[in-house]
Image 1 (cartoon, rainbow, N blue to C red):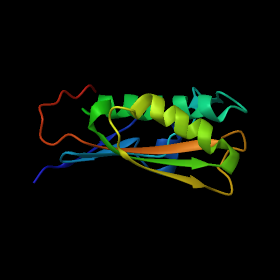
Image 2: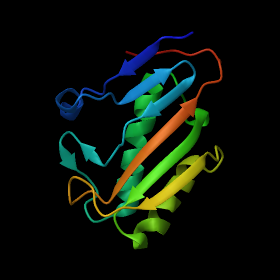
Image 3: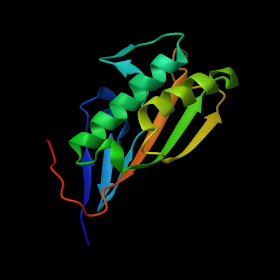
Length: 136
C-alpha cells in the first residue's frame, strides 16, 4: 500500500486552517479548493472566466508538483456564486480540458469566503501507475 503524501503550496491558510493543497493517495491526487487568489490578492475581480482560468492554473500547477499532468485529470468541480457565470466558467474549463474530458460538476453556491471570489474549483487526477517525477 502506498503512503499518503501531502503537498503544500506555501499559502498562509494551509497552515492556519490545517489543510494541504494536494493530497496524493497512491495514484489518486486531490486538490483543495482553488480560487483566483495570487499572492494574497484576488485576480480577475468581476470576471468569472478569468477567475476560473486562474483557479484551474493554480490547481494544475499544484498537481504537477505532486506528479500529475493535465492529461491525468479525471474529475473537476466548479462552484460559482451566480448561475449567469456558468457559461463563462464552463467555457474556461473547456479551453483547458477539451481533449482530457474529465467528469465535471458545476454548482451554484450562496457565496464563497471572499465576496470578490466568483469561482472556486477542485481537481482530481489519477496517474494510473505511470512513472512520475515529484518536484518538491
